[in-house]
Length: 504
Image 1 (spheres, rainbow, N blue to C red):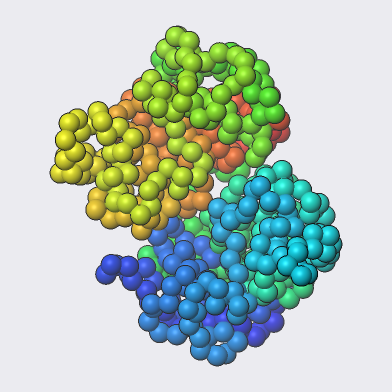
Image 2: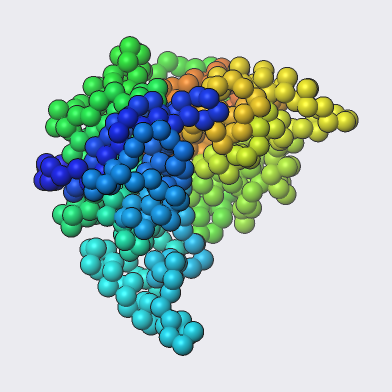
């Protein structure tokens, strides 16, 4: 992106430090944000990105040293205080009201009234004018749940701007978007920049950071490594700055874009899970697949292709209208998720936070799903903790402290806890929905190594993701879904990013 921002510093952190329970999350970090720029922020999970953004968004103010806004030292008392001073944040997990209209979401902090009566027409007209001013063509009378994830995200950004934000923090904004939606978002960011808005762009997709930003700040182990102009950066350099000496090894693990992957023939076990003409109207239809023991079967598709609803049906969270599901050759009718669990099917959803009790200890999160079988009789915390310690060590949760709250962990380590939760009793089939979403390359490597180890132990793994690189890297085969249908099955050297994208 061209360097058109001014040289004026709009926001400055002066050697900020912040700790949680004695552990430093930020260590003497200095940061300068220039007016009208798009500033990238990258680093591994746990590097300090989230802590830094929470500080800027007013989530906490118990940090050392100073923050300056427009040259004046300030300290936000709350998110509302930060917003009142012009800072807004769009989180990775969108905080939208799905059952309300676009206009109602835009006016969620106060609808126009007259004599105590809501002026619906006026609200719709003002909402439409706001979106048109921002260059967005979205029907404000539609319910948010009817929009694609990409459109919902654009509305959420518009809502933040409508609240008065001139500094907009975007947290992993492309993690759930298709390629066309990502392109639309980038065009929107360019238009916001042209209107004088300042944007902080946080992402693990380094190609996106390189395309859309003016400057990039790299964090590592709670410290700032450097800030460099985007024109001087490359993906290889960023990975090296983020990870250090491990960078070259990790780079080699990821295939170059566009390269076909040579795959060794694997000896697969018997069919573990199969479906025949499985159909859920409006989501997917006539889906037939076979997953073998000791196999990683990918399912690739853009958001809305039907893969999430399919996964939920296979775990009993939703129900197909027709078709059959079989486990170990026996027809299976799942009334609910408990029945799926008891049958030997485990499911990790796309939003890891929905699988965790963030305010509860790690050990409770790990043992809860199988508590009755793991700790029969009277509940004994000592036994629970011992079981959790084994799983924490097996999946590499850091820090390896079972008494910590799950919410205090980085995203990558939270995902490991979700995996540990289901691996306390090894399943026959493990369904993974976006298992590496929002993770840096180091955390992805650790999680995917766990998945491969499970495959080698004979577990049948269904890997559902919108990240083609993940499928190319570890899947033995991959199905491609588009508009609720399977459009291709790719194996061997045909399993490439290009073929996945083309068939999706």
